[in-house]
Length: 492
Image (cartoon, rainbow, N blue to C red):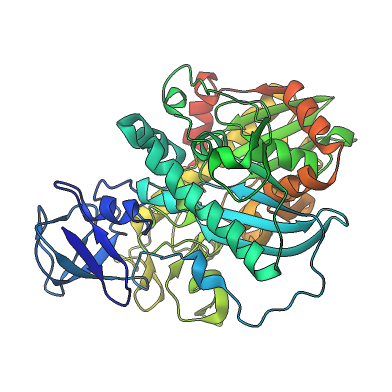
C-alpha cells in the first residue's frame, strides 16, 4: 500500500496492519506523538485527502490520528505541520551561495542527543572556534515524548527503528556541514546525551533500564569508528554516564561548569522530561533523576508544542491584557515550556488559580492566552506534577547532603528552558525555591558545551571520568521522604 503526501514527491510504503504513524516513521518522516501512539495526546493529526483508513473514522474535515489509522489501500494525506505535528528535514537547511570565511583544516562535530531535540555544533579543531550550531527535533518522538516510552518501544522490538531514526538525522547533519562548509571530512564526533539516547544511538537495546534494577548495557566512555555506525566521520566518542538515568549530558554539564573546582555548594538542574540534577557539597556530588514528564517540552499540554517557530515563549499581563511573544515572531502555534511557566505564574499572581491549582469559577473553560490557545485544568495538573518532581528532587538531594536549600550558593539551570526561563516566574510558579532567585545562572545547553570541550580540551575527558567516580546516585523512589515531599510540593 502506498502513502502519497501532499506537497511531497516522497511515496511511503505501508505494511499490512501497520499504522500510518509507523509507516511514516519507517520512511524517515517523523511527526510528534508524545503519548507513544496510544491515541491520547491528539498531536499526530493528519488529513485524509483520498482513500480510506481502518480502525478510526476521520472527522468531517478528514482529520484523524496517524497512530490509530491503518491504510486500507493506497491513500493521499496532508501533514498538518501547523496544527500539531512538526516536520523536520535536514535537506531543507541548505543555504544557497554560502561562502565560508575560512575552511578549517581539521573539523569536529559536537552532538547533544536529547529526548526531544538534537543539537549540534561544528568546531574548528585547531582553534576551538564554533563555526555553526544547529538544532532539530528528535525524530524518535514518533515513539513517545520520554525515555520510558522509547525504552518500551525498544522492548517491543523497535530498537533498530529507533537507531535508524537518530542515525539518519546524525548523518544528515554531518553531510549538511560537510557540504555547506566545503569540508574534505569531519574527523571527530563527540556525543553527549542521556543514557537511553546513547544506547539507541549505538543500536543497543536499552530494555534493561525499563525495570528494576534499571541496568544499562554501558555507562563508560566509548570510542567507535564512524564507519561502524555508517556515519561520515572518522571516529565517534560517547562521553561517560553515571547511571541508567544520569547520563553523559549531566556529566558533560558538570564538567563544563568546572564543578570539580567549585568552592561552595552548587546545584545543576537540567529541567526537562527527566529532570536530572546534581548537587556538589563538601567534595562529593549527589545526583538524582526525577520524572518531571514531558510538560516542559510542550507534550501532555493541550496546546503545548516544542521550542519551534510559532511557540509562545513569553507571556505577560499588562493593563489587564495578556501579551506574548513567539519564537521567530510568527503566528502562535502553541505554548512551549517557558511560556507555560510564565502562564502559570501569571495565573497564580492574578488569582486565576488557587494554591491547589484549581481554576477560579470565572474561568470554567480555562484561561485564554490567545484565540485557540488556552490553559485548561489538565494542563495545570500536568504542570503541578512536573514542578513538584523538580522541587522534590532538589529537597531530597539537599537532605542527603545534610544541608538546606538556602545553603545552596549557586544554581546552574541547563537546557533550552533554563536559558530562556524567567527566574521570578519560575519561583512564583513553584518550580524553584525562593532562596534560589538571586543565585541562578541560566547556562543554556551545557550538554552541547561539554561535547564541544570533549573535542577541544584534552583534560576534559579526565574531568568527566573523575565526576563519575565521585558521584552518588540517590534513588528517589527508595527514599521514604520523597512521597511526602512530592505531595506537599504539588501545592503552590
